[in-house]
Length: 349
Image (cartoon, rainbow, N blue to C red; front, side, top):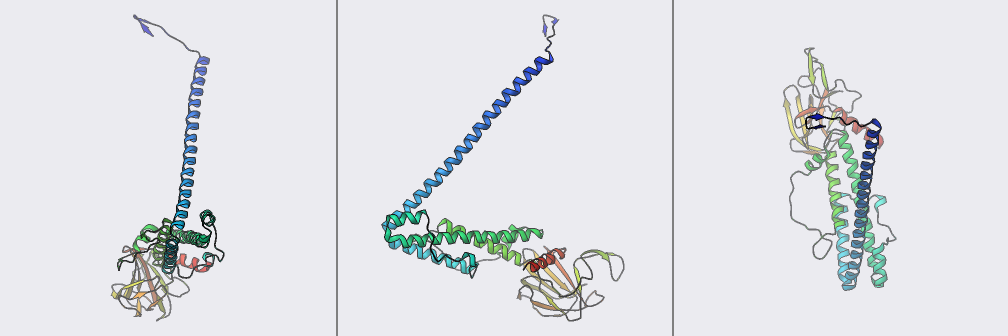
């Protein structure tokens, strides 16, 4: 310390420093503990309040439904009929025949709301049980659609593609007359039913996107004679890039569409000879080269496994084989992961 031109030194022993540091750490620890306790208390209080709000909302819904039953039971019956039609339309449009585990139970389930309505209005007990059964079925169908969506998402991701983009791209152009679906007389849709509809629509979009991915071997042959990537060119012997897979086989062997799509090219391309291209949406296209004949025409919609051509040796070819390409946004990608994924799926089935 400097004071009036004089410098004085204050020395603090190591023991005193340790004691001071210990006190500081203790104070800091106590402060952190109190803040943590306060935060946990707030979280706990918030959770309890949220649960209380949910419980109050549920009670309010139950009481409101009881009032609706008491006020106009015929209107409730009409709503239930509309809900049943909504469920049937959603199932027919997106699923078809219900899986065995999702079939409605013969004995209608009951819940707190149905029990409360039955106690207050015995004559409405049957309708309340029907409503409870509908809600239970909607919940099961929502979970069923979500599980199928997750399976499609996982399969698409394994192929290195974006599930969200596939789902968006699978919709394409849309239109048609407006046909509204409602579960109530006022034209509204119960949020639980809307959630089911959204889950089913998402399941459809993802599965349609997955179906547009090459998943069927384009030729039934024993082996691949040339793989994707760099190789020695069969004509020049120099290093060259091979943009697909070569499937050798007898002349005229059937060639199949690797996925559903629309035939967008039938004709000759330089190097490929006779060639067919099938566009699958989402930027995906498959190309089939060196063909000896065509079995499809431009604009034709084909399913996976549909016969589209015959194997040949046209173009830049040393013998009868199929040159098969998968292109994403007109850039070649290795077809092998797509076909291996399809083979694994077939083995599981």
